[in-house]
Length: 67
Image (cartoon, rainbow, N blue to C red; front, side, top):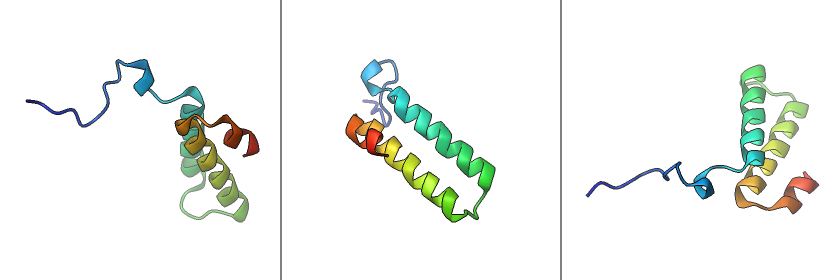
């Protein structure tokens, strides 16, 4: 019997929400643009994006609005 380690991407419920994808792309862009040494503003931006991503993956729009 073959076990799947990752969710089957053919099911729409298993795909990340668009908001999560957008936050993830913004996080990647920030990391790519800034490298390992972040200013306080860049670190704060990362924290907000991380909160947005986590809220989107949980489907909690109230947290996204607060961020």
